[in-house]
Length: 358
Image (cartoon, rainbow, N blue to C red):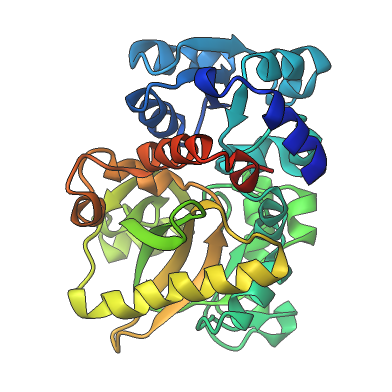
């Protein structure tokens, strides 16, 4: 979709009868609830086995059931979405289930479609963050160069599945094959493995919102992930750990809210500003709406960033109705899904929808 084509579609929309839609996964409850709070029509595209969630929580005015998420790319479905004046909100499952096909969606997306491609390319991510002056872990180009502890990651929004720690070329190759045998990764994943210096510290994920309408960058929340098996292995005595030879994985099963030490906030805020400023240069108009920096805080209070998500993250779900940072900013029950809906509403009122969609 070209900007011109998106603009033509948006111009034909009934601005008084917009629909907020998304894939039923990841942060759909967050997105759809926020849309309903701003009186938008809401639409969920999901597979049959997930429909119960959106029925039970009553956040979707309409549910379109598909066999595969790629079915939403059919001409019939896309025409139906446009007829309903739909703006789609991308999240991690768009990358996981659609990949590059996200560019084939002939329906306006909230945010910058081009930056979704930057997010899934680790080399582009590294370039973006480095140029923004963000402190990064070292990237190990070849397993033979492993001298200290590293973490191996794989492409796409895999939720940490298959990630592992290694400290030598031998342990890296052994664990790579073990993860493949367990079905955690594929041969294609192996070809695209990303090896990164492992920074010891506390993982935390500040969530930001870049408003085009208000021309500002907001911090709305922070979380950390609860990962299996790495967060449960401590319940097993060290002796038994050695006997059963557990190789921890990092599959995310949930998120936990975090409030940062206040003296860290200036740097966290500057990091968000710097990333947005650089995004304006690499893919105009830069970041639109939510984004997240995946960081590690060391004992010396240095902040390393190992990834960026250029859309809403699942960790923002912990802030639904409770985030202290959203409260400090808005004095009300604000959260990421509601903030997205608010931006769309204000953009519609000011005739700026073509500035926040792609």
